[in-house]
Image (tube, rainbow, N blue to C red; front, side):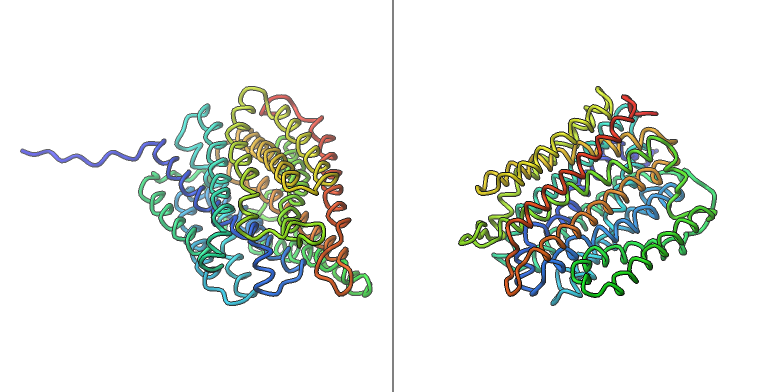
Length: 465
């Protein structure tokens, strides 16, 4: 008599490896716009403000999706939600690949923003399938692989866009995301729900937060152009205050809020969110300004670099960022989060001030961008790890979602502000911003980064508080 055996369930390490493959693929898809933004601005006839909007719309969508994804992951299981999110991401990648103009490309980026919500779900799954000690390092590794994928996307986007077309630079990583999603579906065991409250989605909170973020982007992006129309600018500010106040009021009273603001009263979570916001405002300046500076014509103060060359110049920064995740995870485990964040903040401030003071040679920008990328990876990974390991397992998605929301909001605010600085610093009749506008952007980012040291001083030395 022949006995049949059911196939063995996938191991935790194989499942986490599948998550790593997905992190690489989504990182590549997310990163293709940065090195090719000057090319996209030329092909689609975009202004600096429109270029800034294109570079952040994915993150703004992510800020809206992330808390919902984290909540649903805690409630229904991370695997079930992450696979559905990736279906939306793949649809967005295909829309971006086929986009004939800026509005359609923006729609594709909006759909791709669902990928940001996969990060807290990854942390839920890592903690569900690995022992506590290994999960700290694994969170850093998954974060590092996401940045490693961004490195690959940064390097390949330019040659693909110039050798084939801008359409293929979105299509190829989208195919990789499709393949990685299949791997996660096949190798990842179903994780049990951690929360069973059965409450619905906080749609009122979602609408109000959407209004808050969109209005904030309008104020930041159009503020310089609306100085001559103070009533319009005042109206937008009042609308922003109304949306923000209404959102806080709804979230405080909701039975199952989109963003559980009570989490912010926990020292580990609240301080992590403040630090992440300030650090990402600083990081965004280098992320947005350095490629723009590379593309400035060589007969002025720039280098006239092509999209391929810009991707190559950004490679050391992407490599530094990919190494920062695992290094930060190990550093937090051995030295504590405060030591890692302090080192990262100081390194970032030095890099930004260096970019402001010296940017006349290509290596100045390469080294400065690499320092900022390394510092950002150290700090953000430390904040996410610290938050993920300081709350109950059932709150992992909500807590890390808060940190990731502040990450994308900080980045979006920083990019919009620096984009506005370049727009305001562009002489009438010219398409080239004044060199002083770049200097002002770097100095402002360094000042904001330095402010985060005031918060770092209040952190405990360990991961938990």
